[in-house]
Image (cartoon, rainbow, N blue to C red; front, side):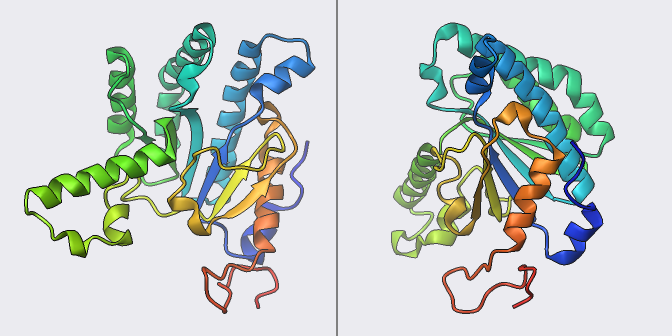
Length: 255
């Protein structure tokens, strides 16, 4: 497929989202439609991750958050979980050098408490090696759940209040945000979900309060640059009001 339009036209027609989040859905259905094992769908999904990262960097997006593995995914069949862990390890080992060369900064959000020692070490290595890079920030939501993230932030605030470090009456939305995994990451402007499903599935529940949502009918292994550009063009037609009466100046109409 060729890009739907010249990327320069996208960049000049409206303000690009600073932060794009993607719920990568449909690997299993993609494989089933082709009478292939689910593992092949997940493997092809990793290739789509590479395309998404490359296209986001080329288009000038600052943050890309990918929903790689939810805290609920542990309930999947053990073999599928093992396959997903293997693919993640393989991606980090094989792609980290290339990401570093591309000036990509890698961040991991999610709980690491119950992860295997070797996986924890790989995640830490990815963050440390790319920590000073200044290009696209690739945020991988791994062992992540939005509700759990909010609950953990609330616990941290409760502990601080119990110690007398903060007044419980001073706790507000901004303070809670500062205790989330994404404390130093801007909220997403655009969230894309593939496979046609229209729900957030516990992804960035707090941060997505004012995000624009785009649902694409294709399965994740088929995601490519034209699909990203299509989502960006849809984003460009939206009027972002953030609860107010005046829209933010990112719509192509300029109103």
